[in-house]
Length: 349
Image (tube, rainbow, N blue to C red; front, side, top):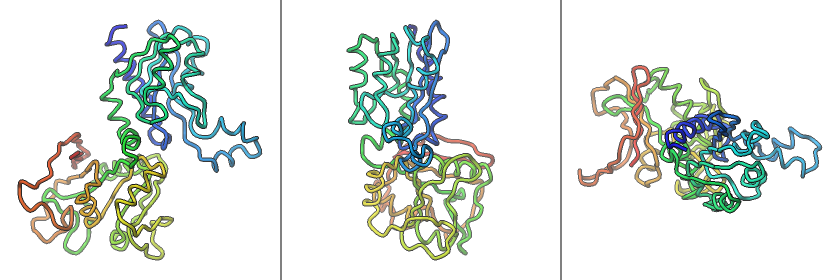
């Protein structure tokens, strides 16, 4: 099949996968498209993740064996196959991530693909999860299915960055969010910081929260700003809220977790608990500590068209910085987005 056709349908699968971004974690957000005679005959995205507690509440007195089919997430490939039915025989499957080949809360997707009679499978990227990691592709090839991997791989990898990072490192993808004036100040000398940026930028921050499994702030931010750290303005679930230090009684951030250990240990713990993305929202002291400890994977800075005009405002990162120009940590801007009058800068070191 011409590569431009494969590119078109994989792009469609990526768009379908985005529908699952806010509800599938800790499972990956995957999109799948079934095509026959240059027509889409089925599509699916990863279903919502349900905990055991949520499954029990939903299904009541079902036997545990029956409940297992409802726990976890329905995989994208299974949804696409169900929609296509008998038309799947001889068709081509486009899936953004390598199909699973292991028994978890749901059966292996490879078994369902093989039984369906699909002739060809085009995959965006292989799954670094040690339970898959190429075995899904091998199972399909062993069954006589034509398998091609790497289609639109850069776009898929970008979409699945937090998931891939977690599976490769065991840690959450850590995003630091800051809002600043053009001269790099996040608060005035009197401590006031609301609002540096406009409505569109603030709405974008809520989307960042919705995409994150957990959110972390310093106790000073709780004392000074008393934020709720919930998702508003957009659809999505509230992330786990973690405060570094003691949580003042009556704070709006409750229910929240207090953490008093090392930041490194916190990152490790969250990774073990399946947190794919951690959003760090401040303040400058916590941001500076995490920066110096090399714990930040992505810096998201919202810059407003404003200037504080002095050196007495609060800077982006508190604490000692690079002593010389040779000591600067340089990266690249991977995204620059206009949001109303503000600009969002995404930096990866």
